Amino acid sequence: GRQARAGEEAKARAAATQLDQANAAEAARAVEEKSAETQQRAEQECAQLAARLKQSDQEKAALQDLVWTHEEKLRRAESDAAKSAAADSSEAGQAAAELARTEGERAGLEALVH
Image 1 (cartoon, rainbow, N blue to C red):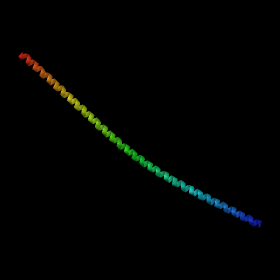
Image 2 (cartoon, helix red, strand yellow):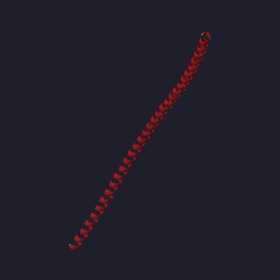
Image 3 (tube, rainbow, N blue to C red):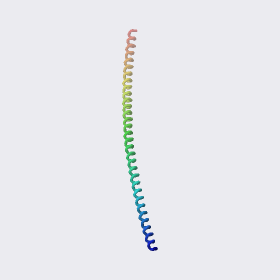
């Protein structure tokens, strides 16, 4: 009897150990799967963030181009305005000189007449 019971207890302990090992292996497998899922999700999120960053960079570059184009147009307009003002000033100077010359001739003629 006692020997049989000891044999049964040994079998039961062996079965329990086997069950513990199986449970531990199952738990390890579950952790591994969960870890792989988590890593895959993290990689997807990372890829989405990288895509969003690239899009943001492209939008930023487009805005910088737009700003540069407007600044260039503004510079050209200022340059044209300055040239135009210089031309106007030059014409005004020529007109003033012409007027002074005419006034001078008129004064000279009046002096002759009087």
